[in-house]
Image (cartoon, rainbow, N blue to C red; front, side, top):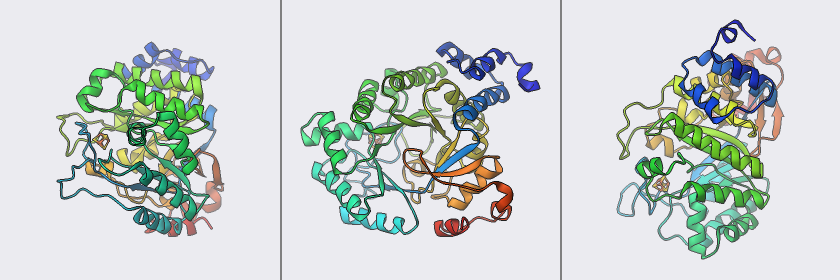
Length: 390
Ligand code: SF4
């Protein structure tokens, strides 16, 4: 234990975490109400180290939004459009396959595909898309759809969520995305995403997917109208489901973005708030192996710092992000592999390229062996990033 922690009012929680003891909701709220970020980070670091040792991961992936047309109008959403809007779009299966083909040439292992709740595309569009992508490359991992999209597809297919998930799985779906969790408390949901699925429905879609042998990630959108107690309550539901199914591979805390929506949020998440939320998630979610610092929402610099505050993953190359950028994110559209490796190494961790399920694909050599690469300037393409590893 370091000197700062020794003198901290939170040191009892450090002991708990160090001994592998689960913290309570009251403990989590105490952490959220503390300003002692250094101690919170030190506690999270103990848990991170125990779970993931000195490794931090990233994935080479591509995002594709098949459409931004949506029948809902969540108040916080800057992404959705109606058919009358000039900047609405929808991609054909052929266009999606073409984007996937281009990205495969850059070395991606995963496609992350989500969209709005499209008013008229048939269920067969989604199964055709999955089949066509698997036909392009059966090794490509397809991480697609949020829980609310699954409910929409079930409605289209006139089937139960379970039957729908079975069909999507047989068409090629590898993993569900974690999006759409927002904040579970009903009053907050109706203020930010009226009409969206309930907490129970979100959790039930993931529960069913896990029961079918599937894996997924989970999220929390923080820094809008919720209280700190709402955040703890949200994490409590995720921890309970994970105790039941063990199907979540990772958790991602998503900082709210303030632009182009119907909400009046003045105090968007600060760096302090992002770091403490990631750290407390790491400490509280003791049954979820991986915590991602999402560079799109917090910027790569802060995501890098988060590696010392409980995170062990900085997500992926992405290539083309719409949802956060339409809501005001100032981060770039993509990261190169070289940039992510550099950020991880500077933070003192060993970079690991992972797949969708956080399984290692490539473990990098120790920093001193490739110090030149770690100090190199930004690479302009994913391929250049890959060449730096050779
Ligand atoms: S958050 Fe999703 S469901 Fe809600 S309006 Fe936006 S695209 Fe539609």
